[in-house]
Length: 268
Image (cartoon, rainbow, N blue to C red):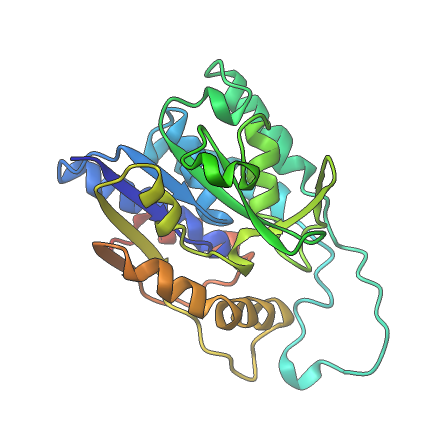
């Protein structure tokens, strides 16, 4: 029996996926197929190419601050202080090139460059702003009838960068004639795609949505909006899951790198 694992997006909290995988391994649950969206793709890709959960945690600690470092003046404003009706230049928007480079370097250490070279079946969703459709980066195409939806000959770094291009934080990722943004817009927990890859049983790991308060900043609001927009799609995907593990809300912000250790060591 093949076990599939679907990891949802959740910003910095995504490192909790590595802790969850470690817990599964300790309970002799072997993962045969993996998929991840946004932050989930960051963990899924590293695990699929052979990095251990603990080493993934170490890598997150090493790269997190440089990846998430922004001009956060606008993002840190609470709802009460956010003024609508004015044009504001967001100079802190990042390209995401640091993610792409870091992952390509880490893949080369394992002798891997392209998604199709990964031995473990893997799926990473992203959304194309041009076609308004979901595309899936994968190690192999599961359905020849939907071949145009699946992309295999792309670097792992580019695939992860595309799926994790969260609106307002990262610019869309350009690839050929596509402009990719965060896969969570349409598929935040890719259980359905993991199932298509041949999983007999699918375990999905998702995050409990944080509540919006007067102290919430603009990034918290954007994350909440994406949660609401993708809730219907997520429901359909989660319905085919055989087991759903929910990581409780802990107040960790989208880019709050100070809580990485806490998120990793928290068990479901």
